[in-house]
Length: 119
Image (cartoon, rainbow, N blue to C red; front, side, top):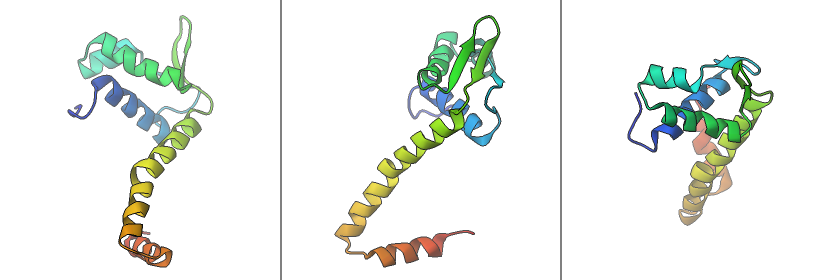
């Protein structure tokens, strides 16, 4: 279920974040506990806790004492902003650097993107 790419706790945090972005876990709703994640994914509870705590530190999840873990208001926006910034860094900036080396104009790049647009 988890790939060999990166630590398992980070992969778990990414899956939970994907579920928040997709709306599977709407804002202000409960998410499974770290123990529930550990049992479901057959992982060490400490590993699951570390993944959940990553999202707590980002302000995406919060704990209601004695009740459980919940998705914070604004969590989806936080995650989308973070992912857009990562997209720019990981994909757009390298693309633009290579395009400059290959001497593509902005119009040529736009044309290439438009040709690939599935819409």
